[in-house]
Length: 360
Image (cartoon, rainbow, N blue to C red; front, side):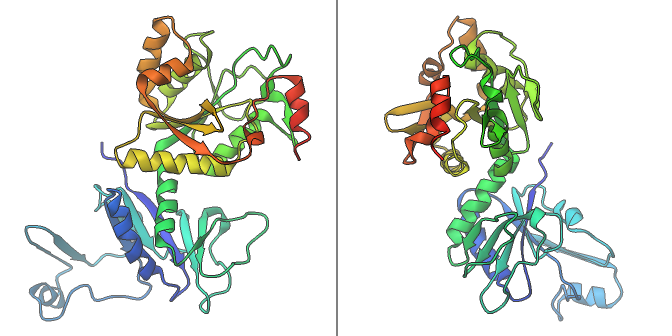
């Protein structure tokens, strides 16, 4: 069954530059191998065919619809009321993405153009707005900070769209919350930092990134808003958690995070996602990409292909359980982070827990 195309709107008031931006985005998206279609709503009416053509004469004579085709394309003109963009999208089943021009009051995810001299502030509803595109510093609602992209940088705008598309269509997340917490003396998942548990902090990061399906592996506590997955192979460490979680996922990729690294920032995760997405779209990415800071590699802070479940199960069946040994076998890429070492702190002891409270 063919997957439905992903719809995203490029919105803004009249003369904000929507068509110009779309025509710049299409070749960049195509460069990454995407099949892109567009749909535009006309608030008035339009002449779909050129006077002097046979099909125009057919319509003028009273035909309710016409079609013309050649070896490489076709065009259908049909008189029909109340057609929707969703119905029209069905004419493009092969498309990976459909850019909607306009639709500023729709429920589709959208980028809104706010151009100097044309508009002063956004008009779209915040809940559907994924980014503002502008050539000046737009004043925003302090309750929800929307990413602000440079109108004069279509490459970065396209990269942002591709990241969002990848997250929405191809990425799940698992928080590894198992383990005995023997050195801590209590379940690390339920420890508080700045008013939230470690577990909730990790879940919130996934939601802020736009990841729809978040799974929790091995959680033994009392409060959890997401789906908890039990290991199919108990007491096999992180690999056991990954194997069970990957089998529950419908996406080809998974963001893996350990619950005891609560200070890792969303920006670090965004960069990891972008590097992973670029590598896999170019056909050069290995099955796993993990973060590295300084000389330390974090095997439980990365993006994994979910089809590794069988390979993990085979590793477990052989009596092996070390994550690094598994990564060496299947192959992995590394993304180096230049961020402060503090944000990668693994909080495994009461002493480290007290230390991170002083970071501010």
